[in-house]
Amino acid sequence: MDFNLSDEQQAIQSLARDFVNGEIIPQARKYDEEEKFPIEIMDQLRVCGLFNLAIPESYGGPGIDKISHALIVEELARGCAGITTSVEANSLSSYPLLVGGDEDLKKEYLNRLTIDGMYASFALTEPQAGSDVNGLSTTARRVGNEYVLNGEKCFITNASHANFFVVLAKQHHHDGSTHFTAFVVDRELEGVAIGKKEKKMGIRASDTASVIFNDVRVPLKNRIGGEGEGFTIFMKSLSHARPMVGAQSLGIARGAYEEALHYSKERKQFNKPIATFQSIQFMLADMAMNIEAARLLVHKAVFLLQEGRPSITSASYAKCFAADTAVKVATDAVQIFGGYGYIREYPVEKYYRDAKIMQIYEGTNQIQRVVIAKEILS
Image (cartoon, rainbow, N blue to C red; front, top):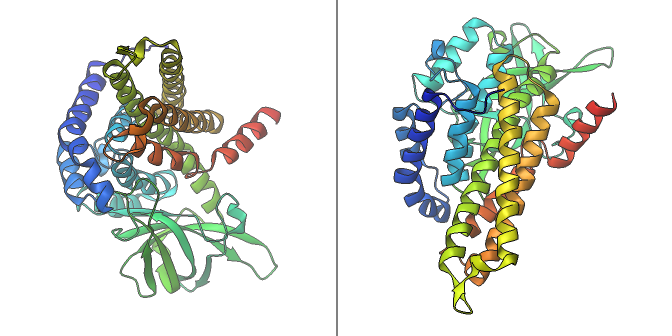
């Protein structure tokens, strides 16, 4: 085990940190207030090589290692979790292709993301099926060399801007059995419609909307993997993605902690900084300790990914603990700010709002605990 970052990793971390300080933090409040998709920021991130982070160099991506990916996500989320969510939607959408797609499919659609500057969405959740994937009602019916898709996906990140969607659908067979198959669905296909943009509590700079499929005819070549392999492909994809949600949570927690630390040294009560009071010191100490613990869990999970040994348990440890840490740290940061922490002029209320979704998307923290319990009891 080596806890030191390489020179290259430190350089990548520094690049991301400088970009966040110079370009994201000064504009994060504006994008949050306007609930505006940050196209200008996205374009700048592409130029800097801080986009499409999961895609190998052979498909036009940056080809970075998983630790570097996590370092970038942490820095971006320290600046704005909404912008980070939009960035990582492309990474999340690329995982099923990388895990299960054939070479032609990977070349065509990954190059669209990297070379053509397109956006993609990972379409799994439905109005009546979130944690219960078996409850999905979107269907795919084979008709010759095509599949006909019908159904609705909800809470889809980047949906209004996506050029294609990575979709999981259920297939029904004459014998009564069902299985899941994954597809790439182009936005311009007839029958694809985008619902209204959701108004959210946090991560407002990201676009979230529903996607409706009405007799959409998808060519056979756009199937990811074989029939019945979709569930496995999507679950493997989430094992790659969940540690990065942990890294995002880590960035939120670190941002809130750094703001609270600075404020506690400046804010005076009873003629001395509130940082001199033990009650505040203990809160800050717990923040720092849990952030460090979360970082170790995240880095272990991404290290295992890098080694080609993805661990469902480690991914759930990282996502769950880091998300819980983000919520607790952001809550305590608001408390340290007192009444000012509740005012939108100050940054900690945004960290507070953004943190909550970390416990919900890409598998709720309750589901992470179900996964962990299943693994340790098996």
